[in-house]
Image 1: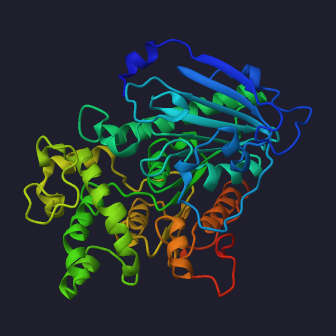
Image 2: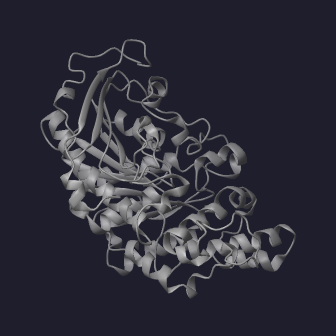
Image 3: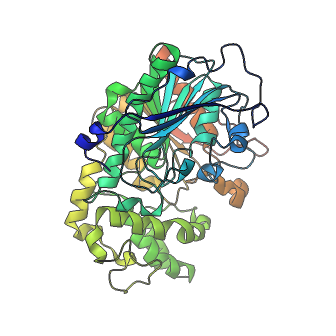
Length: 457
């Protein structure tokens, strides 16, 4: 991260415009007005930018052309998910001033990277997002970008200013890295509106947020703190950072400590996991989460909020048994006032001031619904904003739709519901057509195309 004064002092961007040769991953021929605004694009305050005219902006072509990174979005969607293709337009890749170097995309080894896509057939609107988890700016390409581009939206995503398993090292004080996430989304939103004006001759008449996991947190935070920039947003299982709890650091230590005992048959350990918020019925996913998510997530985010807990270690010791000194399995958030103070710097309050639709899976075992969106919905109501919020609890939904590859019909993909919710959000904002009431969305019937269909009403 850079101080604002230094950021403002840095010079103009390096600009490169390219047109891919025929056959380099494009799906359709260029129409007469194809990429007509490309030469006018100069991303404000970007240090580097690359402008490419593409005959297809979707992942069906950009994987081959090198304008996405499939590893960034792998595992986020269910097998069988279908996406549109053949959307011509402009892609802008670049980065803003920053000192951290966790993002290696485009050979830049530079953080605060972004991607902006501008379809030839523009509907006058913009969708902005921040990367989920610790992924980078291409993480939304399959989930969001392909689909919104086909509907005519311009699209932009930021890497949030830091990424990967060392994101917590960015910044000088606890919570600095996450604070940067919020600033980078605000920055990209403002800049992209100007790029849209450069390209099409006017700024977007509507701007929406669409985010999953940490990207859902960013939707929540922006609509609480920067509402004038947006018309509404989709919050898909946003992370709940809350100083008084619950939050990641109040339940993950229990999972690390008690899951091995539960696996050995200890029913009291099982009950303790249910008591801190893990859903009954989701147990079949716990082994996966223990091995992939719980330990790493606890250590990285505890280091971000409470680096003094383990002394000179950086993010503790992986899978340390309870009783090991400074083991994250024994972490007690309630006894760590410094962590609570840091959490307060980035916490959510429920003061959402634009229409927002929230979706969350009942079998989410990384951000359990009882400790997250159930709580956040009550926070919104307490702040008096329940009338502009809807909440859809997706039965058997998990944290990532990719788990359908492992568990089949025992889980249900959330993406088709999120897309349906986005359509309802735009109708609410633009036509005053009320979305479906808040409710639990049941699992689809046998034989239904669960990867591509959802009924919210």
